Length: 68
Image 1 (tube, rainbow, N blue to C red):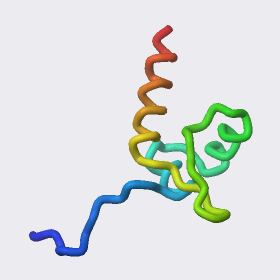
Image 2: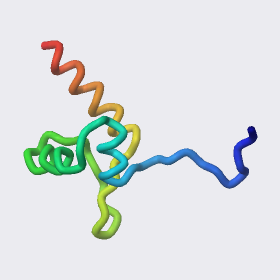
Image 3: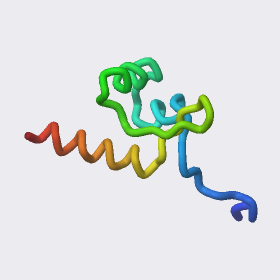
């Protein structure tokens, strides 16, 4: 199966997709953001996007913090 020429990997996720990617609800993701504990995000107009690299780094940080 070949990949279409116009296909490109996603670089950022909307909050629903970011929450799904890490196995939590969108509501919990927003709660973490309100508490200042969620993954970093950028704003594009009124929309939030989580960069995939930031999401990975945030998960790694949480994993390391849980070990302490």
